[in-house]
Length: 215
Image (cartoon, rainbow, N blue to C red):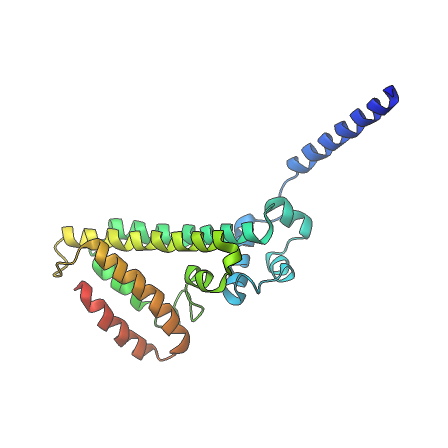
């Protein structure tokens, strides 16, 4: 019996040593670069259609490294990919709104920038809007997270409209919150229209018509 407990103790010791060794190993890949590659795959194929092989190949990592970094598997990876998109884009937009002389013009330019060939999202649609449409009800948590990030964007629009009011740049009497709700609706709509309409001039005129509300 004593030998049995000694054996168990030895096994536990070796397991702990192995865990410490693995925890201390340096990463052999750049997590931000890997996330950027995952974003590209999810954006192109959608959450459900992005296979493990697609993701691993694009990210340039093996299964062992993947599950060490993303213990929740594909779901955790998608959650982190959404946060990556937010960190890369939303914070920059908010900072620009807070520091520019004309936040209303900035928002107009933001929307009009979606129409040309240099559009930052092309015709792939909004990352979060796509998630709301494509993800099944079985992944309700991911839907809620995508919805939350769109609400964050709506809040950024509201900040821009509030500053516009304070600077006397808006003629409309509509409240900043109402204008922000209108703009997030426009955002959702134009990202669908952008996928079916390739004429940038037509898209520009359509956006100008819609953006006249914030003049």
